[in-house]
Length: 282
Image (cartoon, rainbow, N blue to C red):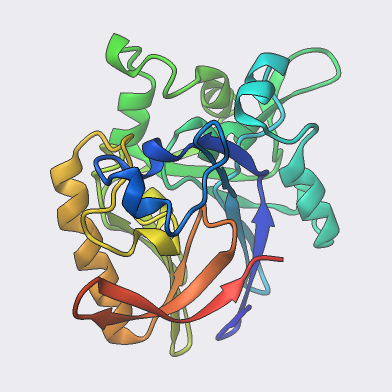
């Protein structure tokens, strides 16, 4: 996808299965299954649509998928891919791990930050991208590394602490410029420090929404994930962000949609927002 002078490429961080109810929270299955057909175990397929932004000077990666560190039991539970799907997909795009100079993490859940680190040949945890600066929100990092019992399992520290130890971590605070042509919008809701990433080049704009609106099936305000730590904030942030995108004709980027990686959207009477045209997943 061309965005002004920038090139955007969807990079798969791996597909996985997850209980459909977790993706739609309080929405009854009778409603959401019309848009996402579950299997006999109530699972639905999910993508991890990371985004490679090439500016001509930089190779920037937004989110990293679930990575290569899952145990065999975890792979069976999630039906996830073997190996390192993110690195493989980057290779298919002609980009090596050494070529990435910035990694922006929308939030620090395992399916977004899992690919930030890997285990090397000596069994040591190291950053996957040796030349990259990793960027995250300060409050998100503080919560993720706090070890509070109610968040156990949400933020595996193997995905995070090696970044700080290697001196490759930059923490930002709030709605700030991340890089030239890229800025953060704090949404909260899904996690305390969840951010959307706005990408601007020339007269064109795209927004990587992260998990505040993970798919085209989540364009309704009340259709939020069960994982959201502050559901009320999600219901406030999502229509505000979607309204900006629709009213300005920006491109919406969806992180978990297995069928559509991006779309133009419009306001709609009955369902609030709807797809105008979508970019299908490869």
